Image (cartoon, rainbow over the protein chains, first blue to last red):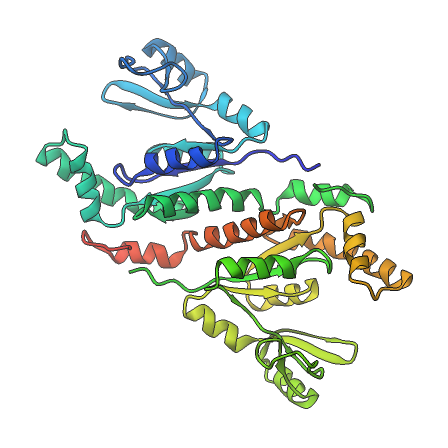
Amino acid sequence: MLERQGNLFVVSGPSGAGKGSIIKQLIKQRPEIWVSVSATSREPRQDEVEAVSYFFKSKDEFRRLIDQRAFLEWAEVFCNYYGTLRQPVLDALKQGTNVILEIDIQGALQIKQMYDEAIFVFILPPSLDELEKRIKNRGSETEESLALRLKTALEEISYIEKYDYFIINDDLAESTRKLDAIITAENAKVARDVIEMLDSADKGFMLG
Amino acid sequence: MLERQGNLFVVSGPSGAGKGSIIKQLIKQRPEIWVSVSATSREPRQDEVEAVSYFFKSKDEFRRLIDQRAFLEWAEVFCNYYGTLRQPVLDALKQGTNVILEIDIQGALQIKQMYDEAIFVFILPPSLDELEKRIKNRGSETEESLALRLKTALEEISYIEKYDYFIINDDLAESTRKLDAIITAENAKVARDVIEMLDSADKGFMLG
């Protein structure tokens, strides 16, 4: 029986590219994949649930966890902390569970330094025009903040060379199929554990 | 519009592992994938069709092609030559077609030297007992040749470390799904062409 560690998939890309929709669609089809839950120091909104929406922490608690190096990545955004706790992710991987992290590009680059076995997937919008449309559709953007978001998106896209895979998100079903395929393929990679298992096995080896 | 070169997938593994069945199943679902046709110097059998079953060549012709380095890989088996012509494969790849080569492990190792961008997939039987059963079911094996085949299979499996991916073929549909996923994932890899395309693109880049 071949027991393998799970893989960590870091899914990121500019905001508006559609990361969240792809992941939501994927786990409908593959509920055995675990989507990591972030920690945050901001106040919970009314419909948010502890450990489902976020792990909610006070600012002091969050800072203590930073000092303890408890995060795979973290950032301060508008005076609040956001981050990914290391232990729940590593526990899941150890149990053979595949884990998805949906994070921004700065967070992804931190993960690359902390856990370079992770697999990095970049979600691209079909075009900048389309990206503009999607951000506008979310509403709540002034002309100025829209321009800033687009400029940031262009800068962020230049980080694609740090990633292993890219998905141009012009069709949700097709993009979901691609992310699914990336996860299946990565789990079929020949790695040290497979080679050791076959080396130690004699005539009666069992793989199934 | 993003035009990419096709990928070359080398599918091999011990005889009896089920390479052929998986590939046949896959191209039913993805007829756009091109399965390379081998050249051989042996006589065509009655039901065999030129350029579909094999490219049939005389021994002299085959030797001339070897001298001209026209093969990606070739071997002499029981006084006949078998090989993969380089040009049809490279032409298909250039046109953006994904190509599958179904070959034995010796051939795969030759390809690794000639074209190291190829992607190597190793098909494993679920167990040696199962492999024995499958080889027996093909009939035409004496006890002696069966023992030799099994010994060869065990030796061949040790080459798995040269491969990128492995598939344990205990279920044809599942194995086909995995090979499909490997091809999809490899086509989503971030490679130089993607980075260049994005670098050269300005605000109005179109990816779709």
